[in-house]
Image 1 (cartoon, one colour):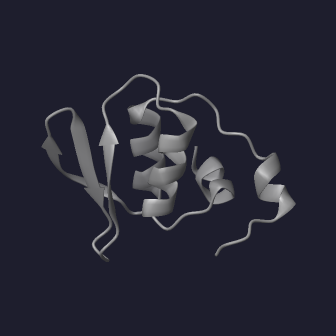
Image 2: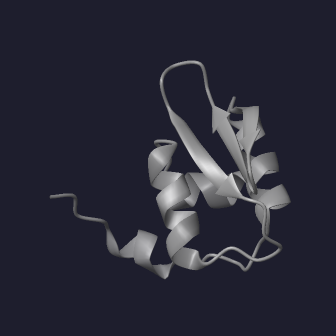
Length: 81
């Protein structure tokens, strides 16, 4: 079980779309490898990958899952935005 500090709970995610998520992940070394329907698959060459739906607004739960898939913390992701 992973416990988060109270600082990470205080950081709120903005409402963002797929382009902002992709731009942030590119700063961390991820790149788009292919598109599958309405989703873009990104990876970093070290085995981490995720799927980003091409929507203008992504839900907070989905963004948190993408952050987790990419091995990032919420704080680090917000710094990349």
